Amino acid sequence: MRSALGHWNTGLGVYLAACLAFAAHAQEAKPSAEAKPSAEAKPNIVIIGTGGTIAGAGASSVNTAAYQAAVVPVDKVIAAVPEVKNIANVRGEQIFQIGSESFNNQRLLQLGKRVSELLKQKDVDGVVITHGTDTLEETAYFLNLTLKSTKPVVVVGSMRPGTALGADGALNLYAAVVVAASKEAVGKGTLVVLNDEIHTGRDVTKTNTFKTETFRSPYGPLGYIVEGRVLLYRLPARPHTVQTEFDIDQIKALPEVHVAYAYGDMSRTAYDGFVKAGVKAIIHAGTGNGSVSEFIVPVLKEVRSKGIHVVRASRTGSGVVIRNGEQPDDKYDWLVVDDQNPQKARILMALLLTRTNDSKELQKLFWKY
Ligand code: GLU
Image: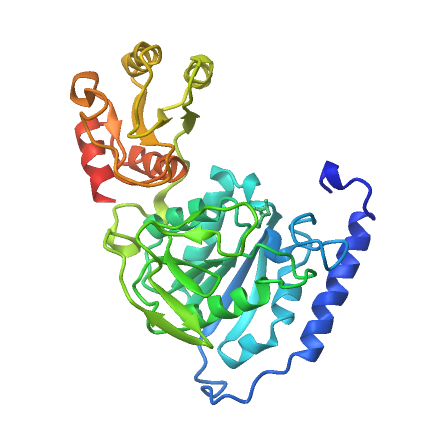
């Protein structure tokens, strides 16, 4: 239970209320009579539950922003959307029950390896992952870069718990299953589905703390889901899944890469702390075009002299960081991200470091992915 919600009922009370609400919808909602493939012909989709708001519950129907995340088991979340049975044979699998802010490298690897295992099974045609929205984009980008399969993988979440008025989880889950079961999603990399939109895991990011239209890609979504139909308008341009040099099955651990956020009056404390902790690279979430204040330049030069990579990124949320633009990267042997935001740069840098430590090679790979 979040501390701010200490006046609420116990977790058990919230959990029971949530189960009742989910069960009520499941009873009311009848699968529609639309023409769909026969049971045998339906694709088999595994829905992996990791927690988040899509598995959340509030004390009342007006709690759209204050509630407890990660309390409803994935099977209950699925049972509340019987319409998915028209689309696919689905089964749930609970891997975690956490808020996505509690994802770490170890959980990321555990999830990736399980998805990979499932995708190798003949009787699995696609995977949907229910996920908290806070770090959903990091997981999606990681899977997009490391899974070795063309079968669809869709990461889905919701901004409102299932107990709330205007809950978005049920429709999002339905849409995610539609996409995971579709031919259109084959070979497109890890996709993210929320709010009727399909995004590539590479580009999408959470842009708003509470609105249901929070997930955006700087270049727009790949497409929409409208009444159970997948409408694609663009394709991912950068290498993903089977096209990359990263293989989730081969990765035993991810090197420590951390992000330092820049602002006026920035101090060197964060950098010193990361160096002391033994990180392999620091993502400098710089102001503007990855700029570095005059008093932090010597700190970053010091960091690099210790063999730790410095990656200039931007806190602006979009755009390309230009090499040798704001800073002489060639001279300092620093790296720049292409257009990835700092949290995605962390994922990419950790993966790149499993392949090479050569800064010229690392720079090329940043521009590739
Ligand atoms: N912080 C929680 C999480 O990311 C809830 C937010 C959400 O899922 O929308 O899992």
